[in-house]
Amino acid sequence: MALKNYPSIHTKLPGPNAAQYLEREKKYVSPSSTKGYPLVVKSAKGMAVTDVDDNVFLDFTAGVAVCNTGHSHDEVISSISNQADTLIHMSGADFYNPLHIQLAEKLSAICPGSHTKKVFFGNSGAESVEAAFKLARYHTKRPVVIAFYNAFHGRTMGALSLTASKLNQRKHFLPLIPEVIHIPYAYCYRCYYGLAPDNCNMACVTWVREELFKTKVPPEDVAAIFVEIVQGEGGYIVPPKEFHRALYQLTRDYGILYVADEVQSGMGRTGKMFASEHFDIIPDIITVAKGIASGLPLSATVASEKIMDWQPGSHASTFGGNPVSCQAALTTIRLLEEGLIDNAAKQGAYMISELKKLELTYPIIGDVRGLGLMLAVEIVKDRETKAYALEERDSIIQKAFSKGLLLLGCGRSAIRFCPPLILTKNDADIALSIFEECLKE
Ligand SMILES: Cc1ncc(COP(=O)(O)O)c(C=O)c1O
Image (tube, rainbow, N blue to C red; front, side, top):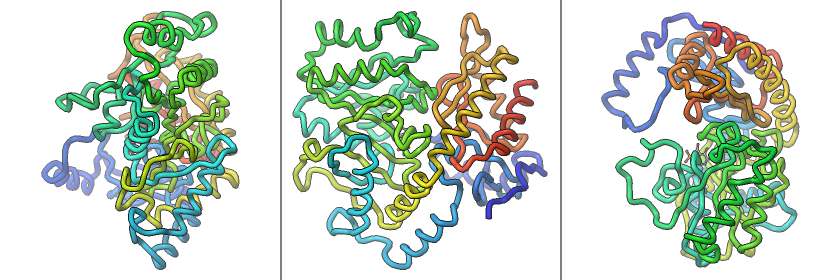
């Protein structure tokens, strides 16, 4: 049963127990990650997250777009427990496993395109991207890979080479993988070319075709274009449909692989199983992680049988496709198909219409955007200049935390709303009213 007494904050934050943990963390845990506020989690159920001082928060982060079925869904718990009783690990790198095969068949069926696909299992989003990067080079025998500014594909060396989101993610880690070229994404609110979507002639794709491919990069040397269908960490940026269509056509013209990173946008988050479906795109390779297994570590790199042609020994992982994670994924996919994807579309439509109403009242909101429950508002100092409002954005997130609403930032000055897909209108209204209080303050 999900808790219903949220949000409920009864200590100053951090509370006394949390404060103690934070002291110990400072001493023993790597300081390399960014934590926006001092939330020390004890437990979570449904939409509610309880901290170590028994403060209860309403979660609009889903553990960074992971717990799409809500925290500790009863059916996920029972499938995990049963599987743990039966088999926890035997390594898919060296042995066969019915759950691998079952989940691979299911992913083949639900990923866009009616053709048969093959699946490589890993443990994290970055690993799924690494696998896609290696597969793209292996299959095409071409050296160059194109990715986008503002993209986030992960932090291992290969994935980091594709990432161009924040400087501190790359600082002191250079040199990265050579022959990765970044180009501007269709971030129409801040068009790199200063154009508007209705008359830009997809300049961000045209430039690649007419300039990049005629002056610097021979297209027949390009293995793949890696693209987030909706940019995630970079700001929840939804490009126009024509952007993906034009980009896709470019890849067809030159035999380049279209690699859709759906680590954040996949598994029902946008109101369809994969965001590619909104754009009628059938990617050559799809990377999937985050929401796939309701919080257990699992990732998948999915490609047609023609493309996934690497030889035994070329790529493997000891833990990839752990049976408990695979079982959680099968249950997760069933729950998504049985109603949560539809709910994401429905509640997402409601949330975006309410956020657009707030946009009319509060000039600090420069843009409201999103698909399904992958939503963001961009906070600006001034609507005319669109100056980034980093401090104001951070202060809104802090205020929301102090009132019991968990939010996360994305991009340079946006706030994202990525709740579990079990969201109800009632919970959406609670979150919207706390968010409005924060805007007022
Ligand atoms: C689109 C995308 N790709 C890859 C990753 C990396 O995933 P992980 O942190 O599981 O390595 C992320 C994480 O936020 C992501 O949003």
